[in-house]
Amino acid sequence: MKRSKFLAAASLAAAVLTSMLAVAAPAQAASRDGVCNDGEFCYYYNSDEAGSISDFTGSIDDYGTTQPSCYDFKGAGNGKGLCVKNNAASVWNRSSKTVRVYFNSGYAGTYQSIAAGAKANLNATLKNNNASHKFGPFSSASCSIAGTGDPKTCAEAVTWAKNHVHSGYQDGYYNLCDHLVGLAYGFAHSGSTTALAHWNAIPSSFKHAGSTDVPAGGLAFFGEGSGHVMISIGGGKFISNDIHGNGSYTETTIAEIKSSWGKPYLGWAQPWFQANH
Image 1 (tube, one colour):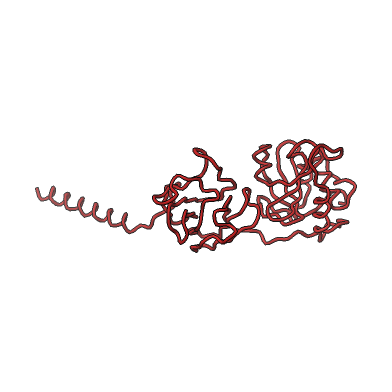
Image 2 (cartoon, one colour):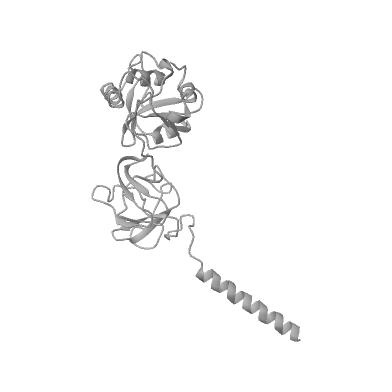
């Protein structure tokens, strides 16, 4: 009898302790439950962290614009059920990393940086104009031809690309992505047989594998098959051949290349070419 009472008391004490620990433990990041938990980046429908919440644990390059496939506001309050894109007014960054909110999908266009732990109203440009967000860290590297021997600078290469933008088919552009970036930097050819061969030949000291923070003039590479390469013009925008029709040369984003062609993104590199190495 005494043993039974002792065991019952011990069980009760353990249950109370477990309950206390559960209450004391901080809320951890959950999977999009409409609550802004520790480790998450959260949008609010209204200013000053009011209204419905949409919570994220990672970067999203395109929220979508229609239900039921879009990322939406899930918490109680104004805006619940609406798509997040172009509908957020304030944010709370409960993660340990800086997060950037972008005007365009694909981490492109103007952005507002939200420091770890910070609450903020989106600025006049981004309020109700939020199209993507990205968790840091962010590269501080700039484009440079140091050690490459390129005939043209990064700025000159960007100017060349912008001056050759066109829609519709033109000879010399179809299926010649690596050749085109070589032309932009003043070479008659890139020196590589394919974009993927170009990427594989570039010394590691010139590469930024996986980074999507590509400075103007940097070369963004994709894998699979012959691969693909395009030149950055800054602000998350690039100029690429063929993405908007064979033989065209138009503005695009990393996200569009991935979604339209299904090619895996490899990273970016300084303008190093086999043509002179």
